[in-house]
Image 1 (cartoon, helix red, strand yellow):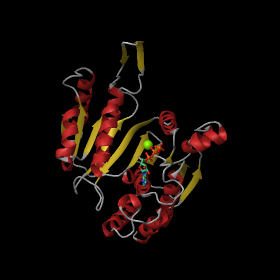
Image 2: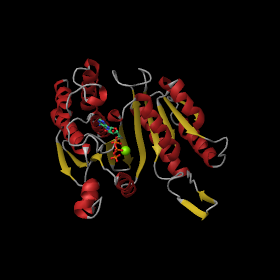
Image 3: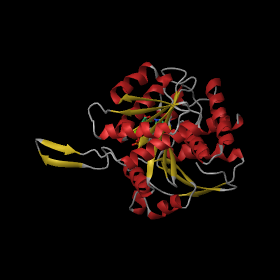
Image 4: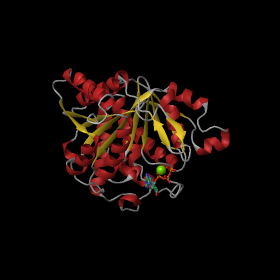
Length: 333
Ligand code: ATP
Ligand code: MG
Protein backbone atom coordinates (compact mmCIF):
# COMPACT_ATOMS: atom_id res chain seq x y z
CA UNK A 1 0.00 0.00 0.00
CA UNK A 2 1.44 3.33 -1.00
CA UNK A 3 0.93 6.68 0.67
CA UNK A 4 -1.66 9.10 -0.62
CA UNK A 5 -0.54 11.69 -3.15
CA UNK A 6 -1.79 15.03 -4.46
CA UNK A 7 -2.10 13.60 -7.92
CA UNK A 8 -2.22 10.07 -9.33
CA UNK A 9 -1.35 8.85 -12.78
CA UNK A 10 -3.81 6.13 -13.69
CA UNK A 11 -3.35 3.87 -16.72
CA UNK A 12 -6.78 3.20 -18.23
CA UNK A 13 -7.22 0.26 -20.59
CA UNK A 14 -10.90 -0.13 -21.48
CA UNK A 15 -10.19 -2.92 -24.01
CA UNK A 16 -13.05 -4.60 -25.87
CA UNK A 17 -16.84 -4.82 -25.75
CA UNK A 18 -18.48 -3.85 -22.47
CA UNK A 19 -15.01 -3.04 -21.10
CA UNK A 20 -15.49 0.39 -22.68
CA UNK A 21 -18.96 0.88 -21.21
CA UNK A 22 -18.20 -0.20 -17.65
CA UNK A 23 -14.95 1.80 -17.66
CA UNK A 24 -16.79 4.98 -18.64
CA UNK A 25 -19.27 4.37 -15.81
CA UNK A 26 -16.60 3.72 -13.18
CA UNK A 27 -14.60 6.80 -14.16
CA UNK A 28 -17.77 8.89 -14.09
CA UNK A 29 -18.12 8.10 -10.38
CA UNK A 30 -14.36 8.30 -9.65
CA UNK A 31 -14.42 11.86 -11.02
CA UNK A 32 -17.00 12.87 -8.42
CA UNK A 33 -14.69 11.95 -5.52
CA UNK A 34 -12.49 15.07 -5.67
CA UNK A 35 -9.25 13.18 -6.08
CA UNK A 36 -6.79 14.43 -8.67
CA UNK A 37 -6.50 11.64 -11.25
CA UNK A 38 -4.50 12.01 -14.42
CA UNK A 39 -5.84 9.28 -16.74
CA UNK A 40 -3.59 7.97 -19.49
CA UNK A 41 -5.47 5.73 -21.93
CA UNK A 42 -3.88 2.67 -23.51
CA UNK A 43 -5.02 0.08 -26.03
CA UNK A 44 -5.11 -3.70 -25.60
CA UNK A 45 -7.26 -6.61 -26.69
CA UNK A 46 -8.93 -7.93 -29.85
CA UNK A 47 -9.65 -4.59 -31.52
CA UNK A 48 -6.12 -3.48 -30.76
CA UNK A 49 -4.77 -6.67 -32.37
CA UNK A 50 -6.80 -6.01 -35.50
CA UNK A 51 -5.70 -2.40 -35.67
CA UNK A 52 -2.05 -2.63 -34.60
CA UNK A 53 -1.09 -6.25 -35.20
CA UNK A 54 -0.52 -6.85 -31.48
CA UNK A 55 -2.96 -7.31 -28.62
CA UNK A 56 -0.60 -5.60 -26.18
CA UNK A 57 1.56 -2.84 -27.70
CA UNK A 58 4.77 -1.75 -25.97
CA UNK A 59 3.29 1.75 -25.54
CA UNK A 60 0.53 0.26 -23.39
CA UNK A 61 3.07 -1.54 -21.19
CA UNK A 62 4.97 1.74 -20.86
CA UNK A 63 1.80 3.54 -19.80
CA UNK A 64 1.27 0.92 -17.09
CA UNK A 65 4.93 1.15 -16.06
CA UNK A 66 4.68 4.92 -15.65
CA UNK A 67 1.45 4.88 -13.67
CA UNK A 68 0.55 4.62 -9.98
CA UNK A 69 -2.09 2.02 -10.83
CA UNK A 70 -3.96 0.57 -13.80
CA UNK A 71 -7.67 0.13 -14.46
CA UNK A 72 -8.42 -2.60 -17.00
CA UNK A 73 -11.83 -3.22 -18.59
CA UNK A 74 -11.95 -6.44 -20.59
CA UNK A 75 -10.30 -8.09 -23.55
CA UNK A 76 -12.13 -10.61 -25.73
CA UNK A 77 -10.38 -13.62 -27.26
CA UNK A 78 -6.97 -12.19 -26.37
CA UNK A 79 -7.80 -11.71 -22.68
CA UNK A 80 -5.66 -14.52 -21.31
CA UNK A 81 -2.60 -13.50 -23.35
CA UNK A 82 -2.91 -9.82 -22.53
CA UNK A 83 -3.34 -10.29 -18.79
CA UNK A 84 -0.74 -13.03 -18.48
CA UNK A 85 1.80 -10.85 -20.29
CA UNK A 86 1.03 -7.79 -18.15
CA UNK A 87 1.32 -9.90 -14.97
CA UNK A 88 4.70 -11.25 -16.06
CA UNK A 89 6.11 -7.94 -17.29
CA UNK A 90 5.02 -6.10 -14.15
CA UNK A 91 5.86 -9.01 -11.83
CA UNK A 92 2.38 -8.99 -10.35
CA UNK A 93 2.75 -11.84 -7.88
CA UNK A 94 -0.58 -11.59 -6.08
CA UNK A 95 -4.07 -12.04 -7.41
CA UNK A 96 -6.78 -10.75 -5.08
CA UNK A 97 -10.42 -11.74 -5.35
CA UNK A 98 -12.80 -10.36 -2.77
CA UNK A 99 -15.89 -12.46 -2.16
CA UNK A 100 -18.63 -10.34 -0.64
CA UNK A 101 -22.40 -10.62 -0.52
CA UNK A 102 -24.41 -7.58 -1.54
CA UNK A 103 -28.16 -7.13 -0.91
CA UNK A 104 -30.66 -8.07 -3.62
CA UNK A 105 -28.18 -10.24 -5.42
CA UNK A 106 -27.93 -13.96 -5.89
CA UNK A 107 -25.75 -14.64 -2.84
CA UNK A 108 -25.85 -17.92 -0.92
CA UNK A 109 -25.79 -16.05 2.40
CA UNK A 110 -26.03 -12.42 3.55
CA UNK A 111 -22.82 -12.23 5.57
CA UNK A 112 -20.09 -13.36 3.24
CA UNK A 113 -17.04 -11.10 3.21
CA UNK A 114 -13.60 -12.58 2.63
CA UNK A 115 -10.57 -12.10 0.42
CA UNK A 116 -8.81 -14.79 -1.58
CA UNK A 117 -5.08 -14.11 -1.98
CA UNK A 118 -3.69 -16.31 -4.75
CA UNK A 119 -0.02 -16.82 -5.60
CA UNK A 120 0.42 -15.85 -9.22
CA UNK A 121 3.96 -16.72 -10.33
CA UNK A 122 4.60 -20.43 -9.79
CA UNK A 123 2.75 -23.60 -8.79
CA UNK A 124 1.31 -25.69 -11.58
CA UNK A 125 1.11 -22.79 -14.01
CA UNK A 126 4.63 -21.66 -14.54
CA UNK A 127 6.67 -24.82 -15.03
CA UNK A 128 4.63 -25.92 -18.02
CA UNK A 129 3.92 -29.43 -19.13
CA UNK A 130 6.18 -32.05 -20.60
CA UNK A 131 4.58 -34.09 -23.30
CA UNK A 132 5.80 -37.69 -23.33
CA UNK A 133 3.74 -39.91 -25.54
CA UNK A 134 0.12 -40.19 -26.50
CA UNK A 135 -0.22 -42.42 -23.48
CA UNK A 136 0.82 -39.89 -20.87
CA UNK A 137 2.26 -36.51 -19.99
CA UNK A 138 3.81 -34.80 -16.99
CA UNK A 139 3.04 -31.42 -15.47
CA UNK A 140 5.43 -30.03 -12.92
CA UNK A 141 4.38 -27.98 -9.94
CA UNK A 142 6.99 -25.62 -8.47
CA UNK A 143 6.71 -24.35 -4.92
CA UNK A 144 9.50 -22.13 -3.61
CA UNK A 145 10.00 -20.71 -0.15
CA UNK A 146 10.63 -17.26 -1.64
CA UNK A 147 7.41 -16.95 -3.64
CA UNK A 148 5.17 -18.58 -1.05
CA UNK A 149 6.65 -16.49 1.75
CA UNK A 150 6.01 -13.34 -0.29
CA UNK A 151 2.33 -14.21 -0.89
CA UNK A 152 1.73 -15.36 2.70
CA UNK A 153 3.32 -12.18 4.05
CA UNK A 154 1.14 -10.18 1.68
CA UNK A 155 -1.95 -11.95 3.05
CA UNK A 156 -1.06 -11.25 6.69
CA UNK A 157 -0.20 -7.64 5.95
CA UNK A 158 -3.46 -7.30 4.06
CA UNK A 159 -5.35 -8.77 7.03
CA UNK A 160 -3.68 -6.39 9.45
CA UNK A 161 -4.24 -3.28 7.34
CA UNK A 162 -7.86 -4.14 6.61
CA UNK A 163 -8.91 -5.21 10.11
CA UNK A 164 -9.42 -8.82 9.17
CA UNK A 165 -9.07 -11.11 12.16
CA UNK A 166 -8.13 -14.43 10.60
CA UNK A 167 -5.97 -15.87 7.83
CA UNK A 168 -6.64 -19.35 6.48
CA UNK A 169 -3.82 -21.17 4.69
CA UNK A 170 -5.06 -23.64 2.08
CA UNK A 171 -2.95 -26.55 0.79
CA UNK A 172 -2.87 -30.30 0.31
CA UNK A 173 0.04 -31.12 2.57
CA UNK A 174 -1.26 -34.59 3.47
CA UNK A 175 -0.61 -35.76 -0.11
CA UNK A 176 1.90 -33.20 -1.41
CA UNK A 177 4.10 -33.58 1.65
CA UNK A 178 7.17 -31.83 0.29
CA UNK A 179 5.76 -28.94 -1.76
CA UNK A 180 2.66 -28.16 0.27
CA UNK A 181 4.47 -29.23 3.41
CA UNK A 182 6.81 -26.32 2.69
CA UNK A 183 3.85 -23.99 2.09
CA UNK A 184 2.34 -24.99 5.43
CA UNK A 185 5.64 -24.54 7.31
CA UNK A 186 6.16 -21.08 5.83
CA UNK A 187 2.55 -20.19 6.62
CA UNK A 188 3.09 -20.81 10.34
CA UNK A 189 6.53 -19.15 10.32
CA UNK A 190 4.99 -15.94 8.98
CA UNK A 191 1.94 -16.31 11.27
CA UNK A 192 4.22 -16.15 14.32
CA UNK A 193 5.00 -12.54 13.49
CA UNK A 194 1.28 -11.66 13.53
CA UNK A 195 0.11 -12.90 16.95
CA UNK A 196 -2.93 -10.59 16.82
CA UNK A 197 -4.31 -12.42 13.78
CA UNK A 198 -5.94 -15.82 14.19
CA UNK A 199 -4.75 -18.60 11.90
CA UNK A 200 -5.99 -21.91 10.65
CA UNK A 201 -5.06 -24.17 7.78
CA UNK A 202 -7.27 -26.50 5.77
CA UNK A 203 -6.83 -28.97 2.97
CA UNK A 204 -8.11 -27.58 -0.30
CA UNK A 205 -10.83 -30.21 -0.63
CA UNK A 206 -12.19 -29.41 2.82
CA UNK A 207 -12.02 -25.71 1.99
CA UNK A 208 -14.13 -26.28 -1.12
CA UNK A 209 -16.80 -27.76 1.13
CA UNK A 210 -16.52 -25.15 3.90
CA UNK A 211 -16.95 -22.36 1.37
CA UNK A 212 -20.46 -23.73 0.88
CA UNK A 213 -21.27 -24.86 4.43
CA UNK A 214 -19.74 -21.96 6.40
CA UNK A 215 -18.72 -19.14 4.02
CA UNK A 216 -19.24 -16.56 6.79
CA UNK A 217 -16.34 -18.04 8.77
CA UNK A 218 -13.64 -16.93 6.30
CA UNK A 219 -11.74 -13.65 6.44
CA UNK A 220 -8.60 -13.98 4.32
CA UNK A 221 -7.63 -17.13 2.41
CA UNK A 222 -4.08 -17.53 1.11
CA UNK A 223 -3.14 -20.32 -1.24
CA UNK A 224 -1.04 -21.51 -4.17
CA UNK A 225 -1.75 -20.73 -7.82
CA UNK A 226 -4.08 -23.47 -9.03
CA UNK A 227 -6.00 -23.87 -5.77
CA UNK A 228 -6.53 -20.10 -5.73
CA UNK A 229 -7.82 -20.19 -9.29
CA UNK A 230 -10.40 -22.83 -8.48
CA UNK A 231 -11.50 -21.43 -5.12
CA UNK A 232 -11.84 -17.94 -6.67
CA UNK A 233 -14.43 -19.16 -9.12
CA UNK A 234 -16.22 -21.03 -6.35
CA UNK A 235 -16.23 -17.75 -4.43
CA UNK A 236 -17.72 -15.97 -7.45
CA UNK A 237 -20.46 -18.57 -7.59
CA UNK A 238 -21.14 -18.09 -3.86
CA UNK A 239 -22.07 -14.44 -4.20
CA UNK A 240 -23.68 -14.72 -7.63
CA UNK A 241 -23.26 -12.81 -10.80
CA UNK A 242 -20.26 -11.94 -12.95
CA UNK A 243 -21.43 -8.33 -13.01
CA UNK A 244 -20.48 -7.90 -9.35
CA UNK A 245 -17.01 -9.36 -8.97
CA UNK A 246 -13.78 -7.34 -9.05
CA UNK A 247 -10.17 -8.44 -8.85
CA UNK A 248 -6.68 -7.06 -8.43
CA UNK A 249 -3.21 -8.05 -9.62
CA UNK A 250 -0.53 -6.69 -7.32
CA UNK A 251 3.23 -6.45 -7.72
CA UNK A 252 6.08 -4.80 -5.84
CA UNK A 253 5.41 -1.46 -7.55
CA UNK A 254 2.60 -2.09 -10.02
CA UNK A 255 -1.06 -2.92 -9.63
CA UNK A 256 -3.90 -3.63 -12.03
CA UNK A 257 -7.60 -3.70 -11.18
CA UNK A 258 -10.18 -5.40 -13.39
CA UNK A 259 -13.63 -6.96 -13.26
CA UNK A 260 -13.69 -10.76 -13.39
CA UNK A 261 -16.13 -10.76 -16.32
CA UNK A 262 -15.03 -10.55 -19.95
CA UNK A 263 -16.05 -8.39 -22.90
CA UNK A 264 -19.56 -9.93 -23.08
CA UNK A 265 -20.02 -9.60 -26.84
CA UNK A 266 -23.67 -10.69 -26.51
CA UNK A 267 -24.60 -7.42 -24.77
CA UNK A 268 -21.78 -5.11 -25.90
CA UNK A 269 -22.74 -1.75 -27.36
CA UNK A 270 -26.23 -1.82 -25.89
CA UNK A 271 -25.58 0.20 -22.76
CA UNK A 272 -26.92 -2.46 -20.46
CA UNK A 273 -23.80 -3.95 -18.86
CA UNK A 274 -23.64 -3.88 -15.09
CA UNK A 275 -20.77 -1.53 -14.16
CA UNK A 276 -20.57 -2.61 -10.50
CA UNK A 277 -17.72 -5.15 -10.94
CA UNK A 278 -15.66 -2.41 -12.64
CA UNK A 279 -16.64 0.07 -9.90
CA UNK A 280 -15.64 -2.38 -7.16
CA UNK A 281 -12.33 -2.83 -8.99
CA UNK A 282 -11.88 0.96 -8.89
CA UNK A 283 -12.63 0.85 -5.15
CA UNK A 284 -9.89 -1.76 -4.68
CA UNK A 285 -7.59 0.67 -6.49
CA UNK A 286 -8.58 3.48 -4.15
CA UNK A 287 -7.71 1.33 -1.13
CA UNK A 288 -4.41 0.32 -2.74
CA UNK A 289 -3.59 4.01 -3.15
CA UNK A 290 -4.48 4.62 0.49
CA UNK A 291 -7.61 6.62 -0.40
CA UNK A 292 -9.74 4.76 2.11
CA UNK A 293 -12.26 7.48 2.80
CA UNK A 294 -13.09 7.83 -0.89
CA UNK A 295 -13.25 4.04 -1.17
CA UNK A 296 -15.74 3.87 1.70
CA UNK A 297 -17.93 6.59 0.15
CA UNK A 298 -17.95 4.84 -3.22
CA UNK A 299 -18.64 1.43 -1.66
CA UNK A 300 -21.38 2.88 0.56
CA UNK A 301 -23.07 4.45 -2.47
CA UNK A 302 -23.13 1.11 -4.31
CA UNK A 303 -24.55 -0.56 -1.21
CA UNK A 304 -27.35 2.04 -1.06
CA UNK A 305 -28.22 1.58 -4.72
CA UNK A 306 -28.38 -2.20 -4.28
CA UNK A 307 -30.40 -1.88 -1.08
CA UNK A 308 -32.96 0.39 -2.70
CA UNK A 309 -33.08 -1.92 -5.73
CA UNK A 310 -34.72 0.83 -7.75
CA UNK A 311 -32.10 1.47 -10.42
CA UNK A 312 -30.57 -1.88 -11.40
CA UNK A 313 -29.24 -3.32 -14.64
CA UNK A 314 -30.83 -6.29 -16.38
CA UNK A 315 -28.56 -8.94 -14.87
CA UNK A 316 -29.83 -7.86 -11.42
CA UNK A 317 -33.47 -7.91 -12.50
CA UNK A 318 -33.83 -4.22 -13.35
CA UNK A 319 -34.00 -2.27 -16.59
CA UNK A 320 -31.59 0.62 -16.01
CA UNK A 321 -28.73 1.40 -18.38
CA UNK A 322 -25.06 1.29 -17.42
CA UNK A 323 -24.88 5.08 -17.13
CA UNK A 324 -28.21 5.39 -15.29
CA UNK A 325 -26.78 3.11 -12.63
CA UNK A 326 -23.57 5.17 -12.59
CA UNK A 327 -25.61 8.36 -12.13
CA UNK A 328 -27.49 6.78 -9.23
CA UNK A 329 -24.26 5.69 -7.55
CA UNK A 330 -22.83 9.19 -7.98
CA UNK A 331 -25.98 10.71 -6.44
CA UNK A 332 -25.54 8.47 -3.41
CA UNK A 333 -21.90 9.32 -2.68
P1 ATP B 1 -15.08 -13.01 -23.19
O1 ATP B 1 -14.73 -13.84 -24.35
O2 ATP B 1 -14.62 -11.59 -23.30
O3 ATP B 1 -14.75 -13.63 -21.85
P2 ATP B 1 -17.71 -14.01 -22.78
O4 ATP B 1 -18.69 -14.24 -23.87
O5 ATP B 1 -17.06 -15.15 -22.12
O6 ATP B 1 -16.66 -12.91 -23.25
P3 ATP B 1 -18.26 -12.87 -20.28
O7 ATP B 1 -17.96 -11.45 -20.19
O8 ATP B 1 -17.33 -13.83 -19.64
O9 ATP B 1 -18.53 -13.17 -21.78
O10 ATP B 1 -19.74 -13.06 -19.75
C1 ATP B 1 -20.47 -14.26 -19.72
C2 ATP B 1 -21.97 -13.93 -19.63
O11 ATP B 1 -22.23 -13.05 -18.52
C3 ATP B 1 -22.48 -13.20 -20.87
O12 ATP B 1 -23.78 -13.67 -21.20
C4 ATP B 1 -22.53 -11.77 -20.45
O13 ATP B 1 -23.53 -11.05 -21.12
C5 ATP B 1 -22.79 -11.82 -18.96
N1 ATP B 1 -22.10 -10.69 -18.31
C6 ATP B 1 -20.77 -10.59 -18.08
N2 ATP B 1 -20.45 -9.43 -17.51
C7 ATP B 1 -21.60 -8.74 -17.37
C8 ATP B 1 -21.92 -7.45 -16.86
N3 ATP B 1 -20.99 -6.61 -16.37
N4 ATP B 1 -23.22 -7.07 -16.89
C9 ATP B 1 -24.16 -7.88 -17.37
N5 ATP B 1 -23.92 -9.11 -17.86
C10 ATP B 1 -22.66 -9.55 -17.88
MG1 MG C 1 -15.51 -15.29 -20.55
